[in-house]
Image (cartoon, rainbow, N blue to C red; front, side):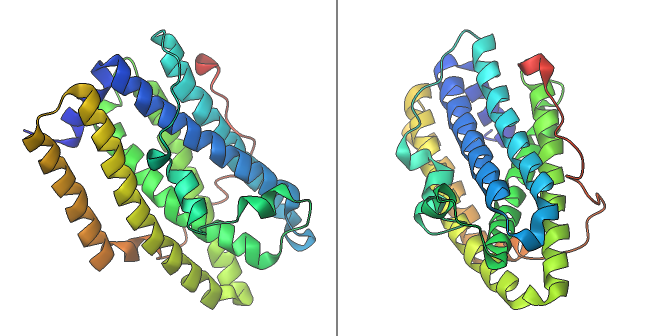
Length: 262
């Protein structure tokens, strides 16, 4: 019977599929680390208090990238180039979601609206990341090979999600509510479409590596399309809701280290 657990176990057990999985994950996390570092450097004067939190957000993402590379190294594997059609962060940026890299590469200070855009983008993508890590944590938290990494990354993603909720609610109270809701909706609708496309591309690559028969590949593709249909109809609303999190000031301290993965 096909399940998320059985699929990930299959990917985990094969060196080539595991190498592709970790390479894709490491690339996306490292890109997120760079983006957050640049945003922290360019944050407007009125929001300088946010800079340490944005810096920690980026440091966490960099740490995750190192963790995935360390998992490869532990198995004697090298990263592989990430196929462009599987590059989630690049595709989001190409669709105008979040802050353009041209803006982040410049030395011009960002605006408050830019910070709201960054937070809305993060709120949507961190929801996806947190949900995925919860799924993996439920099934693989005790796995000797990847359990410790999954639990560490999952906790960080929960912190990131809590941080975006709290900061967006603060900006909403300051009068940015309409911009927040409009940006959240745009990000969510674009993200679910890109997530579908990336999921199909990743599963196609995994299928070729693992030699999946056509019926299995067809069932998996149908499942991805079904998830997109549900998210396009109603599920996206979960990505745009805001509520005060139980974890307050979740990024208020220094980034946690991961010496066992160094």
